[in-house]
Amino acid sequence: MRQLEIPVFVNGYYKKTGWEVIGLHWKTGKTVHRVSFGRSNVPRQPAFAPGSPYLF
Image (cartoon, rainbow, N blue to C red; front, side):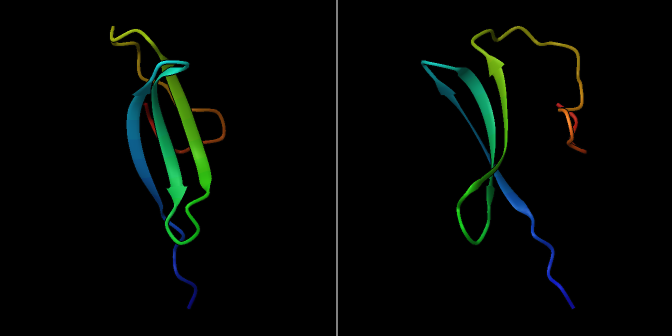
């Protein structure tokens, strides 16, 4: 049976890009998903990231 490859999600604020959520492959540590929300802390309408089943 094949194990699920579930990413680990972390978030943070970076001076260059603002708020981001990054998905890392559990075993390799490679970035497999990345969403940048920009520098604003004003909530925006939830949306699906292109090609992603996750709601942001």
